[in-house]
Image 1: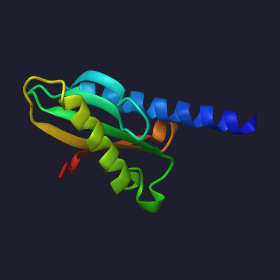
Image 2: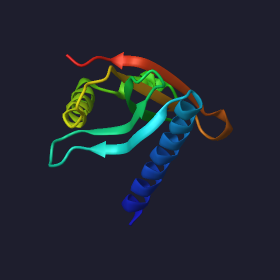
Image 3: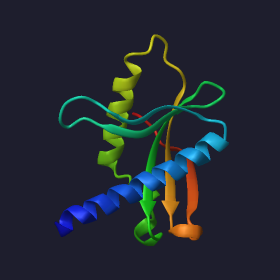
Length: 129
């Protein structure tokens, strides 16, 4: 039972960080299209937030929450494997569109807790090969 409680706490912290990041992006003028987009089947990818900038650019955003910046902070935790899964999911999402808009992969790092939370928005954090 204790392990399940930790999962709920971790998930709720992640959801709260995602909510905070979404509000930050919306204040910057981005429009939410999809939240927690997942490709079907096992081994696919997931994208925390898919948004559109006022200029039409699609933004695939990964939100990372960390209590501190030790070990490189939240942004450094987006490994090459995680990037590949995000890119895979983005390609899957784009397949259903009639025309391909400009796209970008961003990482939002939510660090700290409570009143001391800080958001770092890394635009174009990585590219699709």
